[in-house]
Length: 114
Image (cartoon, rainbow, N blue to C red):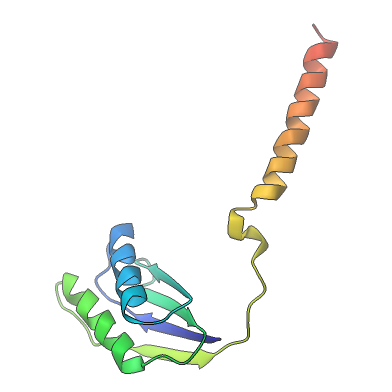
């Protein structure tokens, strides 16, 4: 697994993040792309090494939205497969069980004090 961090200047909102992510997904064989306008970067995971020059070019092309596009910087390294994040689904199972428990307690209280 390879992880690349690409500096992308000029993103101002979530729509900019989507444009950057879509551009990277459309041009390169990636597993996952996460762009952040607050950090000014995109993090890319891929199964194989990527063409860093192509990544820089995509980042520069997307940075044209900025008033002054800057030189894109790329940092790539091999990483081990990360275990699935338990909160990847928003902690859905954990919260569903908690909500079910609270609903049952509420039902018992309502039946007891009617």
